[in-house]
Image (cartoon, rainbow over all chains, first blue to last red; front, side, top):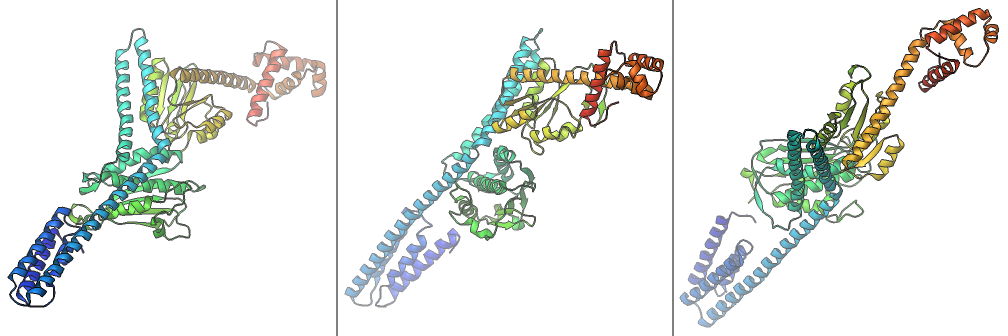
Length: 348
Length: 219
């Protein structure tokens, strides 16, 4: 049940008051204070461990106070009820904290898995990343040689030599940008949401995969809308999703012949202020399978695939409050689309 | 596709087709630094839309580009009536492709980053090859021109002269007097500017070869 933080605190307070009143004022022969576990359960998962312990201690204190204040009923049964309640609260708190620890561990494992999948995807790009760097190196080498020839001319042409040197510097920085992008994607950083331009993020991934796209003689069609509303997202994670979709599309078009190979990537505003990213191909499509099956973990058509790509992509998109789905294209192939909410529609 | 004709003795031009802007800029500078004229294009389409120049040339082509690949273009060059020698450059390390490219008649296949001297050597070889081809083509064109000035009778006589027949035999074959044959023969030698029978025979062979290459019957 999703509630706003302040609503949750309100509910906990109201519940606590209600239980306290019921426990102190009424003369029911039952351990009403056991119901404080509901307050503890509300705290679990939404407050840190220390906060949960505080809430739990508070409930236990209220229980004891109720016991001390109660006039009605037999003292022995009152003591027993108090003990039962305290035990229940303590046990719930202990189990609850264990659950929290377990879910933190799961999240870390998921982040690890996502990173592994990301690095695996990057591995598939090795050849085209090498090609990108190679282009820069070729330009640098050639410019360097031209530079030397200009300097050896009679008389030396310093202006041309200077222009050559400028080109070398610019090409070198282009190459180091490629390395930077690769490093960022391979980093072991924890998830980090920030305001960023989705168009720029997608463009970076396209630059990284351009070599791979070319290698397979695929025509790239881009429709990236500019001036979209600001989005708060984890750049590395969303780039991973886009990278995964692009690599899948390339894979789907590997075997096709006789049909022009087209990869279409678009970014456009969608309803209710969210944005829509679509990656479409003219590949083999879904065959006899349902599009949804492709999102199952460990489903893969690749001989060396892990099959985690789409499953991880889905969990990333949904963690951002969006949706991801796939549809066959009328002219063959498939299009994968995902939405991301923008500032106004951000998920709690 | 425009064709400018400034005459056969123009300075050579190197056409560079590569979709990477940095590579184009660097190559252009290198070529200019050794005194060559460079014309750069980002794609085969742009190249085809550009000016063809009446000068010895050669083509430096990236193997893989978006759209039409360099290798496919090499196969299609005849269709576009392009006879430029081709030098391939690639950033992809395509060994199998290099074999097909060389078999299809490329001058050289270089992997990026290449040594500038390797490229320049290949370009010189290409330009020389194109120079020779252009000289040949010019010579054939000249011969054809001279040939077109022959009358039908003179053409008949020429075809028989180069097979080694004597004037007497030719006269008998054509049913004319030996004098007519002698006169025609003289005209043929004069119009074709042949100094000897041997040279005439060579001219005739060249015309026949050129005609055969294009599927046109000689004469």
